[in-house]
Length: 321
Image (cartoon, rainbow, N blue to C red; front, side, top):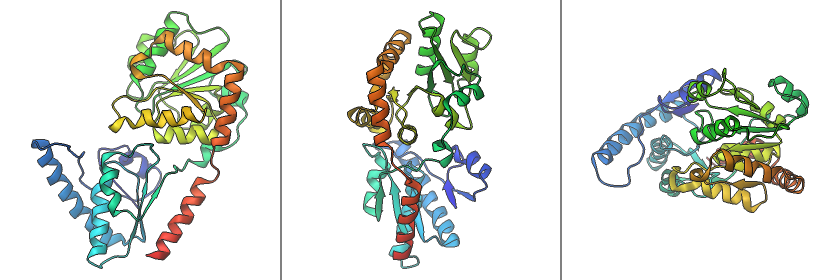
């Protein structure tokens, strides 16, 4: 059973995957006393009460918190039930970021185990022929391919840099760019192109099957969220990372710095990204020696069968409970 927020992506994605879901009230945690702080307290108290009801009915052997403010009332409820001896449920926290957020720091004393690996869907890691993947995406099979993606909602800074570079004919003729604009950004970006396309750029709002994008890519330009980095690692794909500057605790920059230290990625601060800088960084990353080193480092960094290891931990936690 998945427990989440009515206002999050899970409200659509989880039912579509035919998984049971329950919704509880939650609110981002406020760092200072204010009206919003009072709202936070009240909303999370309601969420804890709702979570108690969900957990009493479902009676889980294990609760896995994936971070974010919606995890707070669920984990607190699970520990309350254990304190009252109404449950022996064990609690694990998935924390793949280099710097944990506020919620995860607050939950740390209530957690039995912390897991630092992020599971990646098996569909992402299946072996695909790069030329065939490019054809399936409407791309030339033999051209150097750069995939730019800002997540499900898109990243305006990345989108604008690609459009600017294309409008000024800065992409070499030997390159092709697949720009996944994000659904929210699609119409705005499409309207800036000529007939929905820019020179050397194929635009799509999103892809249900990102495996094809990773297989097609010689290089990915992306944000530095934990899920994206796990997919880059699992597929052995080198990257130029543009960390989201407003991420809590600047954790995306810390994530990116870890990737750079392992030789897997280059970093461009969000404020410095524009069309010319984008092209400059892609050129640098695609130099033969650099690209080979990054790809080899990415493959060394890949971790096999993360879901299998996590399933084994779940079984052990449940047995302890």
